[in-house]
Image (cartoon, rainbow, N blue to C red; front, side, top):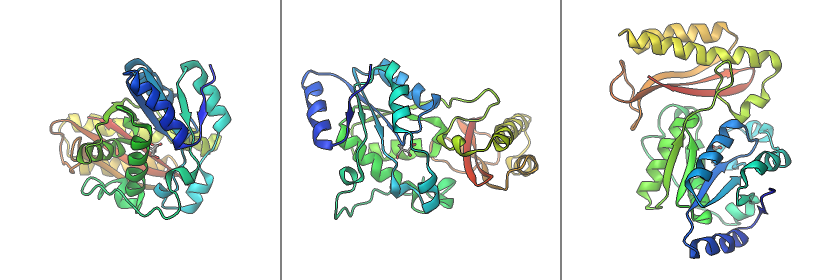
Length: 280
Ligand code: PAF
């Protein structure tokens, strides 16, 4: 079934108003398009938990700190609509920039603390852009539940924080990372990798898995990270931005596993920035 594509917030409001009047639970899956099986797993989770599901597709300029990254970001709307057919979602919201950032738009949602580290320390303004657009998408869709991938683990924590802090009354549901057969986390950015780079890309997850095993034997994270960095660079990556062991909730840096924690990494391969994280 082809889902109706909705391009204006007025039309969306009317649609959602009808559903809410009927007492239906509305879920949203926010995306920037270039949908892959990771996104589709979020859609499946939303379909299982909600009466109505909206998928949003908006390449949010405010979260790109690099103009060429924004320009190169894959845009595949027709393909995306086709991929969503089998899920029979209730609406695909594809707003133009004026629906999200109308003339004179001057507000920013900023989440302190959680955004100072990891991707936040390397991508100035990125999480302000994410927090601002997610707040807009939550208020425009009036969803009760929102589905995000654990692949963007820091983003998931930031969205949980803002939803609670701003009383948005949206239940933020985190869904497991979906991986390719060789372990590479699915990401729209993988489309930007050449065939040769794609083969090398698996080294990131491999090195992280090795590091997680080392942690289980009691060796400290900094020592293991040094080795894992070497493996990632030897595989052809040009830079490892971070490879940290951190606590799940507040993302504080850890030397050894304690409580719920994960390894999180960002690294550059052939001009493409890849991120990943695994539970330890
Ligand atoms: O994860 C993404 O695709 C984006 O950061 C999001 C949450 C859709 C906001 O633009």
